[in-house]
Image 1 (tube, rainbow, N blue to C red):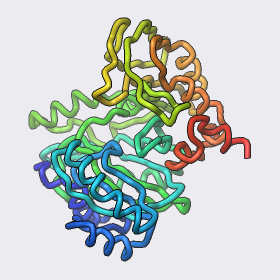
Image 2 (cartoon, rainbow, N blue to C red):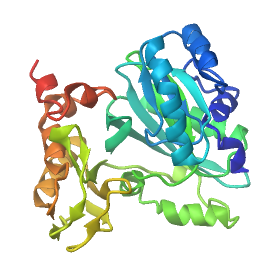
Image 3 (tube, rainbow, N blue to C red):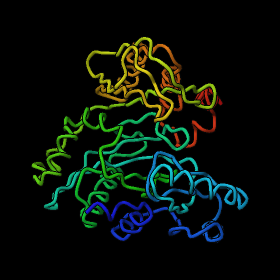
Length: 346
């Protein structure tokens, strides 16, 4: 059943047919000439994206025909290496957008719920760094409308599983569907913290053929939660990945604090895989409380022996752009290693 959602480009067309607005884009690209023809039709700048995967691999922002010529083969090669599939498509690039995703669950009997949304706008190189729920970018009316549309679309398309529908929200509040992830995502802990739902257990029950056992009225989300991706990388040197031995590790604790990790003192961080060391998640009754608790937890967190992005997270929390909830997906890449100091003090 999930095979029909394996291709991002095909899924985009499928869910567009079931009522979700999408960003102007192309079909599968045959070759460089076809890519150039489609880019000219859509209008630069565009994103070249792999159809079979995500995580920023193979994705590139293309501003000119020359950039497309030099990037097409590289993107295709990266997509093949990462996903075993080199198919690519183009999407119109929207600047200064918010990245908002809707968490859904659908059983084989057509019963469906959503568990609210997450805001993933703090990114670098098209990869998420901080996620929070609920999104400060949405009004309650906009939240309910987008969540309802997302649930309706996946049910009509025959989806079955937990899943996350990802959207870009522009400055006018228009939401554009970009992809669906047919799995539990890295940032699921913050949804669990606000709803009290064990999403891993729910996915197993759905796969076993059991009904959801709850309706939308049973889903109650309270408070505000933020997740920080703790990465082995050096933000002061263009987010350069780090490897080496973890000499010391101390996890933060206390009410409303959760740390998911695989590391321990003596753990060797290899150079072959993703730089994610762990996920620090915090919950509080409101957003201001979650920011304060996040800062306290980051102060307590110790990962000694290699450079991490812990200090970067604290700098983000302290900046007025984040405090005001006005982060966009392009901001961190624009201002670099001192993410919001420049933007917040303009």
